[in-house]
Length: 426
Image (cartoon, rainbow, N blue to C red; front, side, top):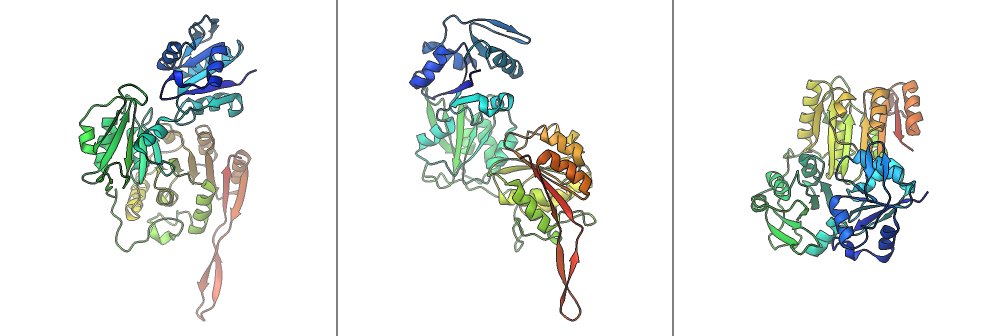
């Protein structure tokens, strides 16, 4: 069976597609895409000829096309059924793998079943319009995601872009950014890329928030970018760092965190767990059974572009995590509730640390983990750790002995209870 061709339409429109991509679309038995994608392909003369219809349990392919604007689950089912008819093409905007349908298709059909033909993403084109490199930018999307999470992802970034949506238009994004930025902070709204009425508007975030922009926009923020002489974003820190206190990140002892009766991941174990998490520069981390919040707090300090949710079932422990975050000058969202139920309302994670909750939480997490994600879980009992290792693929015992000085000045080693660390999936 042919692979599904996933074709990115350039911002200049379907007429700018390459010859190979045009041939794929013309030869396809079924073409799927949003209404505007299908309209653009029809206007370019690439679809519109008679194609077969086939009834599937929850959707009908009409005139050889599938609309992706309605129920995506039904659309995916229709795409699966359409493959028996011949080649299938899915049309998308720009780069399908960049906050696009590519992730959903890979999860549903597997990466090996896709032939992805990306065009330049809207973010790449937006930075191009500004003459700025963006390999060091943090990118977040407010399309189908909470605006607060997108703002939290970029608030400390030196350079960033946020993809707007009808639910979170550019003016709302600018207003949210203005609320966490210093006076005079500036941004750029790049709208309707490739259209005749494309516009690039630069100004104070407060001024931009008072305007109205098309939903198909990218909001760009950059410090000292040269977008305008005064375009530096003077971000004010969300929490002031107490003077003289060390910044979190791979080096804080247990005494640097408020904790309950020694319920805290030891510094040496914490370093291993953070390393095994392979923290990305952006994305979403769940710290489940967070305890004192030490893992989430150090992760937030190490990767400021990462959004961190610390999940704890007890209100007093959740309050303790917030105090620890304040103490160390990092931002994270604290969720009070018992996992796995407390995880249902959260966005799917890229990384997860499980410090409590056991195998039921691990199974729930694995069902939500994004493609390419990673989980690290700690256990006190070997039996549960072995069961977790069956799911994740890796297991190590971490034994720590710390030197304590004797009365004569010599040292003796005092061992802590061993901790079993599992990570994967692999």
